[in-house]
Amino acid sequence: MLYYGKVFLFYNMSPGILLFIILIYFSVLLGIAFYTSRHSNNESFFIGNRNSKWWLVAFGMIGTSLSGMTFISVPGKVGTSGFQYFQVVIGYWLGYFVVAFILLPLYYRLNLTSIYSYLDKRLGMVSYKTGALFFTLSRTLGATLRLYLVIKVLEKFILQDMGIPFELTAVIILALILLYTFRGGVKTIVWTDTLQTTFMLLALVICVIYIMNTLHLDMSSTWAAMQQKGYTKLINTDFNSPAFFLKQVLGGAFITIGMTGLDQEMMQKNISVSNLKDSKKNMISFCFVLLLANFIFLLLGGLLYLYADAKGISATKDDLFPMIAVKSGLPFYITVCFIIGLISAVFPSADGALTALTSSFCIDILGIRRKQASEKQQKRIRLIVHNSFALVFLAFIFIFREIDNGSLIDTLLDVAGYTYGPLLALFAFGIFTKRKLINELVPLICIAAPVACYILKHNEKQWLGGYTIGTELLIINASLTFLLLFLCSKKGGLVAAATT
Image 1 (cartoon, helix red, strand yellow):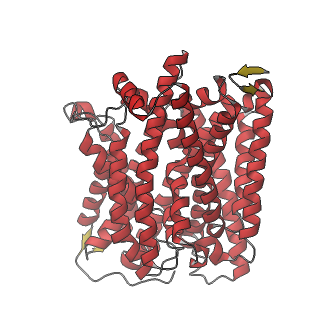
Image 2 (cartoon, rainbow, N blue to C red; image 1 turned 120 degrees about the horizontal axis):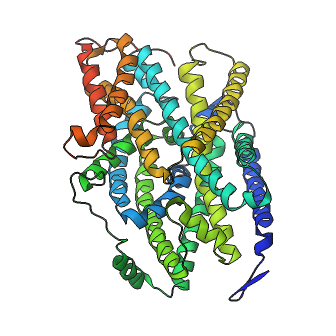
Image 3 (cartoon, one colour; image 1 turned 90 degrees about the vertical axis):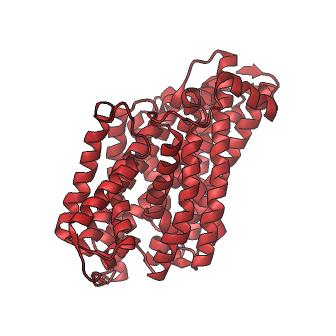
């Protein structure tokens, strides 16, 4: 037992106590899932019976958008790039207005369950399937990357001391996510995400206040100390840098349009709101809160580096926050706040992704609505797909363990750039042109463009005179895909709608 100030720390017991607290947390989630999934059906799972409250969806979406990646990697980046990530956040903010005033009206007007069925109505079945498959790929990679990071932190800083291996941790966490999502789907996760967002934001604020008090800083002296260390640098004016201001803002805007507006997981929650007006209110209020939350995460990052300097702690990047919170002798309640906040950050993105992937695969790829399967048949197919995606998640978690480079948020943005580009181009082609595609060529185009972008990025400095591609990778990918689609199209009427 250690003594720290006026707080007794049961350090040797802490892994077991933390595990017990985590199990209590999961028990609460399961209780909510049981309560909210009563009398649920397939419509509850897919779109929450279009009865979700807009303010509840808006608040819960904060946790889904931030994720464990933000909780760990964004504070860790401050030591090397200061507040420059906020340039991307400004772009995110702009992108949400495009989603609210262009995409949401389209989805409500067509009364969609899966947003990708728009591609069927406008461009044809092959384009529809291609778009849905790219969503499946992108969301699977993104969700498992976020989930892997949290499992790595839990294993490295808590469960390793108890002899619990990484593999077992991954299996148990996925099993628990399955338990509270397999029945209620969107109807359940709208509520569980709200709970988890609350805990995540509380943990964030408590950690900021504690470190400021420990270092005897107020807000002005905190900012001055971070400025002295160079942590507050926001605007990057180096055109050749991947963090150049305009690249980051434009890239962030298009990432939001792709990863929110064209993402079944995020839109599934939005279209579960009963009407367009409330759904727009949800999106606009959410984007302002998200702006503030990301700024506080960056502020926390600066404080963590100041604390590490003061205490002689050498951890950086993704290890910084967990090392300070769990291994540096902080009061136990701070460690608990960190662990609960971390879990609360990752689960809204993991549970939502699993539900959205199940919905999209069942509706878009298997076509259970087109085949007019009975409620019982739809439920059986849905459960098989849901469990299968959990196994796919597990496989990718193990893959990411082998290729981890220490700072995963850049990897996440690269994944989005390669996989959301074709999806963005397909929707843009459908909305902004009246041309008819040669559908048989669409899959080839949507594969060729990301491959070309991959080759370009790996030869960028010698081919582009020192220019480095950053978040604008998504724009380049989407533009190239759009151009190829245009070249493989012809004038003509719109494709006839198909039943979804």
